[in-house]
Image 1: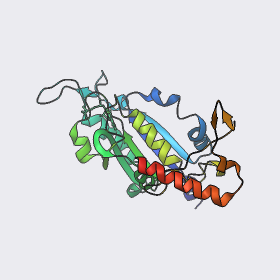
Image 2: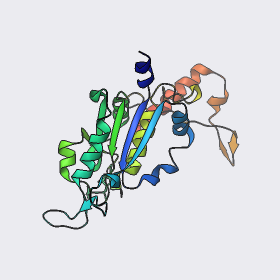
Image 3: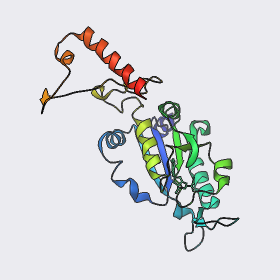
Image 4: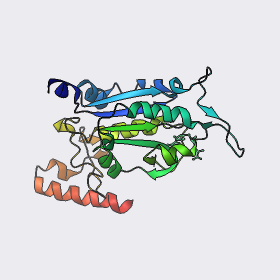
Length: 233
Ligand code: SAM
């Protein structure tokens, strides 16, 4: 029982597969994500894909079959690395493998909620012209695009997933940062406009109603404004 208690963990694990591991050094130690790691609420493991390339040049890419420009990321190193991570899984049904690609399904807050229910997310960051399609077909559980544009790699999408999922986990946000009434917390909901001091900036004033102290009227005004944001979309 003692070992059972020691070995069982109650934090979410993000496993990031990349050929540029240093990219994450500035973002993950900071602010809410940095604090969540220190408190043991999440764990982020960065894996250098090159460590799983078998040849002496640590090759992770090759030319595309059928011709065309650029290089394609090879399937074997990705397969071997994902397999080595999965070997440590006690509960494989709680692990999700995500491949980032511009042609994937568009990521929304609903996906962040859904993915926050897993214990472990393995993320594969593509580079170059993309990744051998066998990774999408046989290794990844899903292919995610973070928007209809093309990035140079999947590392920014990985940061986006870690950030948006972590803040939904219990205790990651403090009370003052609660994610309960935020934009997208309910489908279609957008938050009302926020203001802080000074009351007058140049000639621009904060809406009078917010200074009235009438909480009922303020709530009504905020609901109205939130609806307007939605109509503008
Ligand atoms: N040739 C690919 C295409 O036309 O779809 C683009 C490859 S892109 C230069 C290199 C890598 O960046 C992709 O394999 C993917 O991992 C990542 N990437 C680029 N845009 C992305 C997006 N919108 N969402 C998620 N990942 C993206």
